[in-house]
Amino acid sequence: MKCLYYLAPTLESTGAISDDLHAIGVRDRYIHVISNDEAGLKKEHIHSSNYIETLDFVRTGFLGAYIGFLVGMFGAFLLMATQVFGANTPVLAYLGFMLFATLFGAWVGGLYGVGEESKKLSQFHEDIRSGNYLVLIYCKKGLGKAINAMMREKHPESEFAATDRHFINPFSDVTRTSR
Image 1 (cartoon, helix red, strand yellow):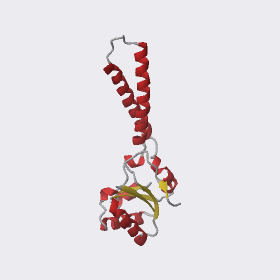
Image 2 (cartoon, helix red, strand yellow):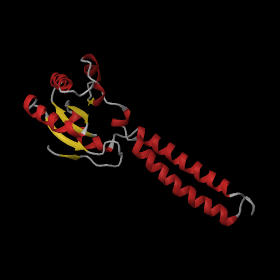
Image 3 (spheres, one colour):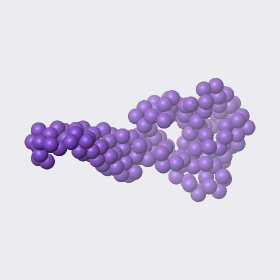
Image 4 (cartoon, helix red, strand yellow):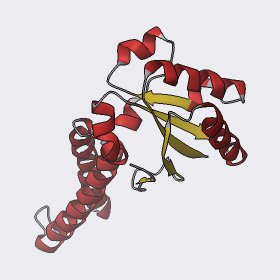
């Protein structure tokens, strides 16, 4: 499954895109729209985006867990070398310390990411701020060409912006195709 990014200029255009996507077999749960006009999306019954798509807490949580693991591993080796808790301290205690540091790092990283815009959306920030609607369409392998053809034919006002082949991976890059 991949994610297609389209920029639509108006709410009406976004609603028409959603209706046309339904007509070719794309269900509501695979269409998400990112916009400053949340009330308009709700009024038109268009699915808004979710926190996983708009915030960066998944990516920063993984980074925090990685940093926490490294800190925990260093701290555990330091505690082992200095024998602060005695010579007979079980290895499980040091592994527990590493686990705690890893989970604490994930928690801190996730909290940091709640305040950050998703890295994947950063290149669309100005478009969204200026009133455009970023339509995210999650599609299975064979449906991508049909969606692109329908969009070119019925919605020339919308702009194909990007494809995310690894949308589930928070570290993958989204390369914008047009500007």
